[in-house]
Length: 241
Image 1 (tube, rainbow, N blue to C red):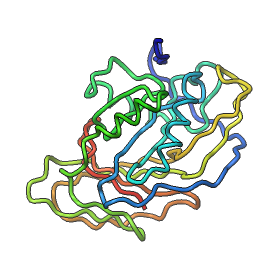
Image 2 (image 1 turned 90 degrees about the horizontal axis):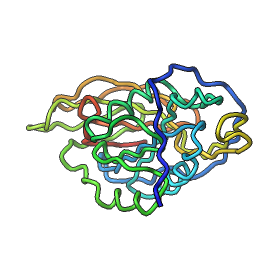
Image 3 (image 1 turned 90 degrees about the vertical axis):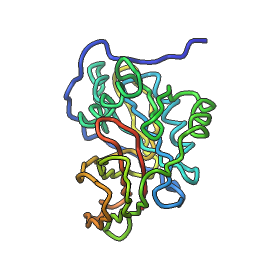
């Protein structure tokens, strides 16, 4: 049976999310793992996409696994179907677009999952996701990395693979349920987990030891740090508080 994959027919839309009522359900967060050695799974999803809810559920399932950092990014290009995703931001859409050429894709689609910035798959089949995680390149090339107490600490590396972008990610580890009132999912209440609320590039790491002070996360949110090759490249190290 052919899997459903949603691709936009035209370009990208810059639409602001709506502030709507949400229901928060407390759940566990990512379990501790060796510093800098998390497997990063990014889901690019939209509340305006009828194919996305199973992928949202799969991301929630793997978010509870030790050693996995699962992140949900809302994209904007399905907002035109009548419902503006309440979590979507244009910079998340641009992050997805940056991945497509390096990963051999013809363009962005939903629901897409990207594992360690190195592999792309349709996110609505858990068995395929399990295989992708099992086969993911272990993040051992990058430096040691930790985030705690308002600081990001990166170890030195004599021969770094290349300069890497330092990305700060703020995400909500709780399950969030959003009632959708229009578009393809009208009348449904969609569950999300580990929703990303902020994405900031802090600068470049060039092999030196760094201790970067950062602001504490807003109440209820966690902080993750990704060291990643520029322009949608591979993630070399990742850590969360």
